[in-house]
Length: 171
Image (cartoon, rainbow, N blue to C red; front, side, top):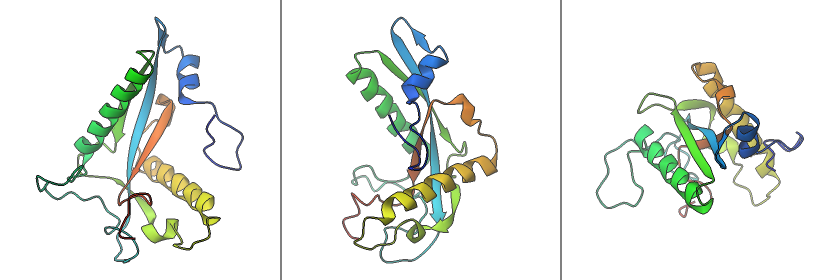
């Protein structure tokens, strides 16, 4: 069971939500996911990768998983996720998805730069608080832009601009 925020009781899983709405046919559960693309306020902080926005430059033909990091890029990642989950579940789990915002090169913009969500210290205690702030701000940005009915989905994927801390080898 996954908790969205540490101060909230355990939430039901996306699969449980899908089953509750009757999304099971012939032993196969269909989960609806919304992938939300969020960018940070631009910055030039040397401690982070990029400037807080998605790299929309042309692919150089060599970089693995390179730009442009537009809507199509994330749709391909969601297609791969759906294929993987269908395979490992032996066909018992299907994923339907949407990627928001609808505009090919847009993202919802968070109210802070990337550094706000990471204090760059060695103390891990910042992590939960900052991930919660990031998550709340991401959903608030999507909600305030309008056009998204969160009730239509069983689960959510947040894609953010910049590298994650696991792969930011230059940081």
